[in-house]
Length: 254
Image 1 (cartoon, rainbow, N blue to C red):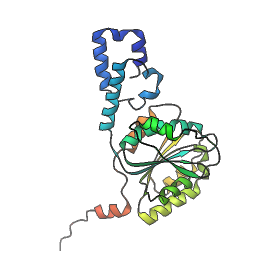
Image 2 (spheres, one colour; image 1 turned 90 degrees about the vertical axis):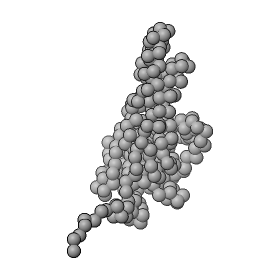
Image 3 (cartoon, rainbow, N blue to C red; image 1 turned 180 degrees about the horizontal axis):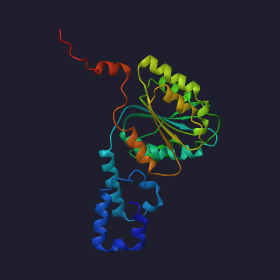
Image 4 (cartoon, helix red, strand yellow; image 1 turned 45 degrees about the vertical axis):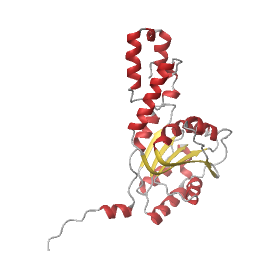
């Protein structure tokens, strides 16, 4: 996939044997598929090559582990977070087809659900839903979480696209998550995608409280889309009640 632009411009695809071999290889690609739409090296105008890429994308979704359970995606739109708003549709394109139950929220000093109308194209659908969104305001992590709970959701996974430097202001969020876990027995798994900053107070507090966290730093590397998908795939963490119910007690001989 990374060689598409060069292969098309070099004229090599005009050689039948090379073309057949390249189309077969692209159609069976397993790596870099999620990011193919966003890298210049994978762009081109050949319809057959594009069809092979689409086949690879469909295949990668089928083979990827489903993201089971209730998943929340929080997009930080506070001041300077233009990058998170811009990149959010790329993550939606990869995650939405794999999620059993996903919802996306924008937040700064307040929060709102991103109402994505599904037309079968998650990238364009999310871009449309976010059209006109501007970065500004502060960062209150507890706001999207509170809105999700108010909507009746019981998130088992939470992915956050945010500024690492703002994490020092998230103590209210950590307390809210702990209350949620105490009330429901659900300990959400967190995927933190940082765009800037190196102060991870909220991440440390969540880890110290026993929550599972995977942390990534976005620097324009589209391969991160595949890594995040792989990390979030599979069944959610079991609640405390489920763990107790699933525990096999040793046989006692009387």
